[in-house]
Image: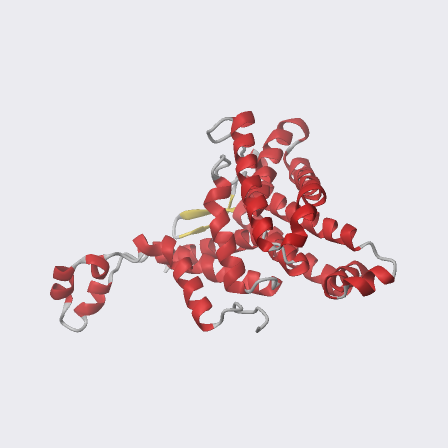
Length: 313
């Protein structure tokens, strides 16, 4: 029971981390229609900026300042790169951001080396919150989860309850009317892209201190972020939260299941036959944990192509 509870908590926290990264991508696509392949690179930049600033101004100031710096990078990317190719369609945007992701990764290796850096938690935050079956659960995991939930509430309220959110949504759905009312639509788009990049940077600054900060962290998480966005529904913030939690829990719970289909065949008296056949019938669920999110994505695309909470075409 303790192991089950531990896996469930880990899955929820991992899912909330996925949401922190995917929220910016969801915001950018929902507002601008841009699929940013370099989004996970902004997540990595947030971790490295926070690592650099930590020794100068301390941990929490670094966590606050690094997303601002990443947001400025996002503003520059939108203003001087994406804006020039946006009228040519998604293919040009994908190719541009794909190349940008490699440039950021190689730049990180050039300045910091091709190995993990010592970005770590301060001792004041490195303590257990409680114990589960004799295993201590880190308090910082709960802090990360709390920040992710606060991020979701803040974005949702900003988009639905503030004048800024009204202007942003009107600039997306009725750009000509918004421009006629005196709003600078290109400036709105630039702000949205910068805000999305800053959200990814915040995720990197918060998570990089707990997990490993290395030049491959964008590659490790980048594909999963796109899975989250597709499963939740392109442009749907609640969908991104639901998909993130679902994927996090499924992955975490599957890691602890040391069973295979052959064990299920035992109930039918055909276990020996299944083990003799081998192949997929003898693969442990734990060994398939990393592939389950992709299987979920394929299932969602087959049954509901718009995503769990996306708009129907």
